[in-house]
Image (cartoon, rainbow, N blue to C red; front, side, top):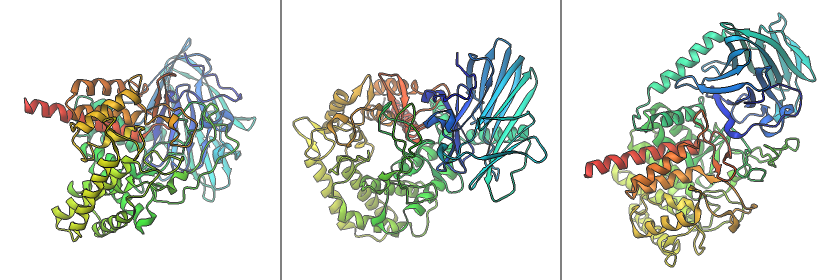
Length: 607
């Protein structure tokens, strides 16, 4: 039972896992099991939210569409292999379906809600609260000139709601009450446009639904992955596509900002940007899935974003390659279920993270060897980045986890600096590129020796989080995948054993022990889902196939009812935490499925 009765009260957001994503490859929305859309940024993923109830209450903007019955039985699913969501509400008087989607390929981004009567006759309520600029700006609302809806305008934003249902204004919100009988349907279409232009016109919602379903089904049909976990892999690929900003090819790390990594805590960050750390995983996932067009678009986004002086490389960029991602906090938003502060922008964009050189160059090398088209300047740019890396690789940095507790010589960062040199040497050798190969080879070997000497604790028989520090870190699990050492090297076997002993909580992987203070924040966070997938990958590489499959399938069981994962999982509260849905988690899921399948195939071939 879900309490869906719409009121004007300050209703709190649902559990993170109670939301589902819909999107149009420009932006996206989160739809709750109760029929409330609590998050939507227009006109882009990183735009200022007009529905921000997710980070506050209903008064900060939401759109609820649900039965009058306060406690209907609710079930929901995507319609086949699409991003069209269908929520079924069963009441004492009958059953209705609310079909939510964002039409693809339109000039103006829209959100459509179609109510279909399936059984009996059900009384419905609608409660629309538009609040732009993250809940701080109330628009001026007027009826459309010819009826059939309303327009709402404030500053640069104009939103038009088209519907045949009679609407009423009350308490700076729009309300409607109507009934739907079996075989009947009622449509609501909300469309954004710039306020200096004429209001976007009405369109055929039924036709838009058919076209949108066809778009997603046709896209899903191109998937070439045919392994044992195809439903989960395909849903992850669809999620990545929905997190793609089509005009540039950039893929945001998550739809949201400030969903807490620790319930009620301060670990709240804005993830509506594109991280270089995801670059290689993204290319692997898209190419293995058969989506070379999307992989090529991502590859070109990467090239444009990093173009320029190598000493200005950032760890993340905006969806069109923007570099100024200034972090600030809207004081009027209390945060998701009280988790404050809310953060807009991300100050980590100005950090020094040496690992991004490895991620960027690893992705460029993978794209090159896979036959993706590349700009004519690709190699000259790569060589310049290596020249700069030669001067900074031995500096302490802020690390993969973007810690705010001071720079260290993080082992993973040094490994990825080695990756940048290693891939560049191999590219120059394979493609006969002009390069100072002798110098690069010497530096590659020097970095390797430095890591093995200073990043390995012989007493613990394990690599450590940073040089001269005994703390462990789940990023060390990436050493075999980076090609730095084989998974069955005794040092990696010891590292995995130590990590299993210290970082596994209820069978799931922590990034590191936050009590050690490396990140400069109060301790406590959930298990990090990508790291848990990395452990499954290492199991597979070590021939521990049963352990790999068992962990992988436990992780699949954490996805919500429509197959979506957040960044972390709180084993004690048994809840998803962190930004949602999280591209990194879905990329790691795909990577694990591929690695475990490859391990099984190799095992059969060896036998």
